Picture 1: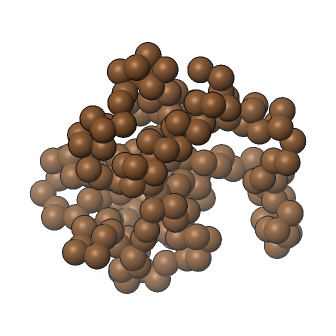
Picture 2 (picture 1 turned 90 degrees about the horizontal axis):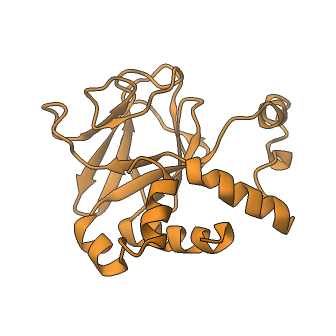
Length: 180
């Protein structure tokens, strides 16, 4: 399943149960939460990030955004065997474990490492940088990342990092807004 809608449909059909999901998905997920829009880019371009339109206070707008979230991409942060590296590689090239098809993402953009304390994220010296909670990572320097951190590779869509439990809870909440 590569988008939120597929997970929501499985949840609605009863084929996605919490305990089974948690047992079968002992890894993290990246979910796109924000696409670049002209309005957002204008706010960022003027340095007025605080007024960027990322939060809705209108219930109808929230519901529309929730329905649009069905199309959000879901990336499993897990070794796929696509390469010989020890770490989980992220980039535009298909031989990465997490392949993000976006021109703003370098071929070998970044890497996740699994440590005894959780995940770390390292920018591989990418052209457009890697950001955690809107702070640019220093190239080649490991940064611990935790569930609910916002991650952005270059100027591609912002993503939310979830552990399996948090992702399942997100789906359950989103299902209520979408009305499935």
